[in-house]
Length: 478
Image (cartoon, rainbow, N blue to C red):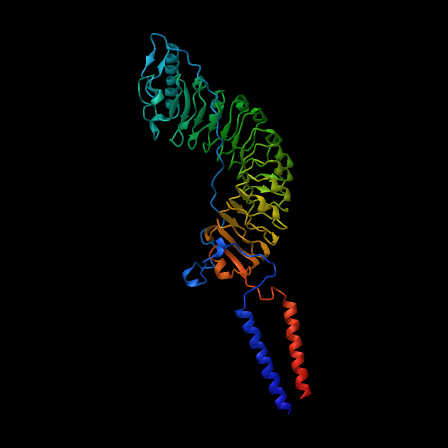
């Protein structure tokens, strides 16, 4: 009798285990949340692993999984020039090389043009012109033809307004005569080997745009304050470690590009330059905390402070910069939560806070940034559930890998694809109708399936224990 009772118990337990296993494997997973994925995102997704990409691929075989940098925004400079050209007399000068065929210069304009051409000749000599890569026209003996020379543009009055000699194997020092180019608006001599070039350039007070990036500059002269019309200043990739206080006089400056120098710290006057639209300071070994005064820059559209040593908290003041389109603070040591006040930044297209020490949850307000195209929060210490991102219809890049995120994997907009969606090294749970195989087609993510009970593991265990005790009681009765 006892053996028969034992057989009954064993058979019953085996049957119970089989039933539970079948229920676990064959039922649809439930999460109890009532949230379902968007039809446009997951419909027609195949669960055939052989035909799809490898779900274990984390995208780190080539880089750290971060998107390629697009570079800072370029500001648009406004040419203040108005047509004040004097009318040519009976002895006017038509058919000037490089000018429209209907332009006729007066005697005074013609003489001024020849003077400008002489200055360019001195520039050619001083900067080793014979070694230039592009020098078409510069060896001409016609002192009225410089409007047609390589890299030179003139206005209709015959004044040189633009000089572009970038990446042209220039070397040496600009001659003092360059200050005589009294109509020059823009100059670009970037990617050349020049010395103290700013000292001469700052004498040309008509300038609205200067590009001397990667020229070997070690300092900015005090005379930079003379350029009150300046709107764009490119000083990237030099050896500058101090910004002179006279820069505060550049009240029309819209774009300040100082990436990859050695500033270490930022002077307070930077936060009072209210015309700034772009502030590019990547790779400058800048330390300390970004102050709330950054909010004074209400016209700011692009802020670039990546690859520095910033610490402390993300400033609440940034929420006042409602024109921001790009905010990049990656590769710093910022340790704070993401302020919920950033919901005001509805013009943001790119938000990159990766490779910091951010804590707390991703605020739900992120889902209100409807113009967001790139959300990069990888390599932080963020926790909790990712908010619903379904309203971010423009989102094309989502990088939230290597955090401590969990909970249900969020709803995603149809604009995302697997190439630019990475959420690995977290602890997500799949949504009800999205098994890991389907999710892997649109995003590289760790996502575990849930049981039919929607995660009520404790209740399941109690039911099993109740069944076992019932069977034992039955066996004893026999």
